[in-house]
Length: 363
Image (tube, rainbow, N blue to C red):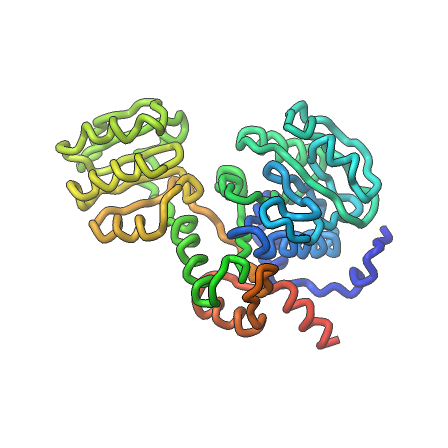
């Protein structure tokens, strides 16, 4: 198949793509710390690498993304670049503005503010706006439909302020894009990124704790057990009501608490109060995407002697860097990369633009 991008024939396999490919993952989420941190650039890099490797790709977005200008700062942003053969699940309205030829493959019967989510096959290289389903349950259906249509790897393009698509219940792996647009100097960006990683990267519960809490994460709700593992409470109650219910166990011999839903400020205050009373407390949440707290909250919680773990662990496939900020305060790329790699030991950190430039120099 002929591609219009003249560089494709010379494309070098990147370490990031090699990790994705070797892992055998089926769903990859690409999320940004904020707007303009290079999420679209990172995703385009993966799409180009997949095209060169002749991997069948499915692509969708969490709600609306891929605009010509971001809807927060109105700065021009790079478009999503799709390749011949890509399967794209997007809202009907976006297809009217597509800058590539496409062929309708399937309908999902999932509605959105921009029309039904349709599955199309891309026929040529070029720009495309992608707007997918917003709800997690619908996202799972769209992913399943893309796989049924032939995608071996489905890529989820994230949206500002939403991280639920990074949940391991949806994605096998996650790329986190960070960069100068966060604001401040390099060390400020490192600190803010580290704080985010602290939340997303909470450890997975061990086998015995997972077995104890399985009913909560299978059926939903809240569970409370004492130090010996005896069930004190197990009901399918809404997370919104969980804080008040948990406070009823302040004087009980509480050892483990499991919460299936989102953990916001009110619920976190209740959990912290219980941790103060029960220093050996273990709290189990679905995964790091369910936590709507600050990393400082987590550190204080841990200093009390309590432990926070996830029923599932998030697989952070890579951290990508964007040294440029459209608001000013850009970094020197090589310096930023060196500092980030020193700061995030144990994570795979890369700058896909810098790597591509280096490859060109080698040639």
